[in-house]
Length: 207
Length: 207
DNA sequence: GTCTATACGCGGATAGAC
DNA sequence: GTCTATCCGCGTATAGAC
Image (cartoon, rainbow over the protein chains, first blue to last red):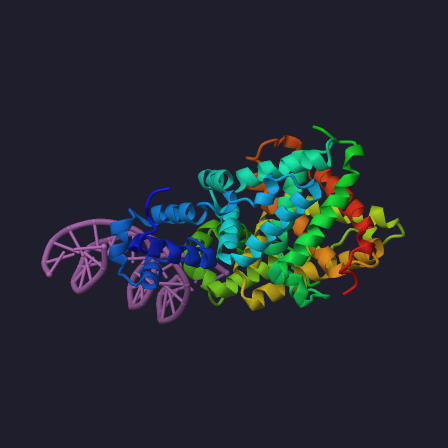
C-alpha cells in the first residue's frame, strides 16, 4: 500500500535476486557472497539492508509471497455457474504455476524445509484465501463430501502436476502439449468435476 | 541380489544415516562432519568409503531408491477387476508416502534439486514401473483418454497430497482422519475412477 | 549506502600413523 | 578401517573509512 514503486531501490533489487537464488538453490545453497554478486554490491553492503541471512530470507519470502495468490481471478466471485468458476480457478492456478517457476519453487521449498513459523506464514499469505474459496466450491459441487479433503485434492493435483514435471517429461507417452497449462487445467477441471458428482453418496461424507 | 545382509557394515550405517540427514536438510544443508557424527566415526573415515560428498550423495540415493517402488503390490497383476487393482495401487502408494517420510522427502528433493542425471536416475529407478502400470490401468479405465497425462494426474494427486501436508494441517476443516492414508486412498481412487468414466468423450483424447 | 579489510569458525578434503 | 592432525578456501559477519 505504501509508495515504494518510485524506482528500484537497492533493497528491492536484492529481494528480486534472492527470490531467484533461493528458489533455485535453497537457503543453504546460497551464500551471502552469491547474493552480493547477483545484486552487484559487496557482501558487507547486504548487512546495511538486512540484519543477517535469515532475516534476508524471511524478507524474500514476504516479498515473493506478497500478493499473487490473493489476486484471485474475478470469475470466482461472479455469477457464473459453478463449472465455469471452478474451471477458471484451475486455469488461473495452472497458469500461475507454469509461468512463475520461481514462485512455484519457493512454495515447494517452504513446504519441504519450512519450520512451523515459515509454514504458517506460507499458509496464511499464500494458501488461505484460495483454499477457502475452493472449499466453498467443493461444498457446492459435492454438498455431502469432505470439503477440506476435496480442496486438498485440488491443490495437491495442481501442485503435484508441476512438482512432478521434471519426471513426467521422461515418462513414456510424454508430448509437448502436456506442458500447455490451459490443456492441463481443462483436463484437471474435467476430472474433478466429473469425479465429484458422485461424491455425495460416499460413505465417509460430511465429517 | 548379493549377500550383504549379513551384518550392518559401516558403509550401510553411513547410508542409512545420510538418507535421513539429506532428506531432512538437503545436500547443501548437511556437512561431512554432520554425517560422520551421525555415523559414529570421524570425517576422515568417510573418505575411505566414498570418494567425496557428491559420490556419497549418489550412493545414498541409489541405496534409498533401491527396490521399494518396484515392489508393486501383487493385486496389480492379479485377475481382480480394474477398480480393485487401481484402488489397491493407490492405497499402496499412499501408505508408502505416509509411512516412509524419508523416502517421500528424498523424492521431493530430487525433483526440486536434481540435475538431468539425477532426475533421470529417479525416474528410471523409482517411477518407471509404477508409471507404466498406471498407464495400463488408465487405458483400461478411459480407453480414449490421454493415458500419460491421466497417469501424471494420479501421481501428482498422491504426491501433491503429501507434499501439501504441512500446509493442509493448518487449513480450515482439518481433522485427524485426513492423515489416515487408507481414507485418503479410498477417496482419491473414488475421485479418479468416477472422474475418468466420462473421459472417453473429451475432445483432446487419444493424442 | 557502499566500500576495503579482516575476523574466525566451518566447509570439504588429504597425509600418514596405528 | 579408523584415527589425529592439518590444509585452505569459503562461510557469515563486523569495523571503520569514504
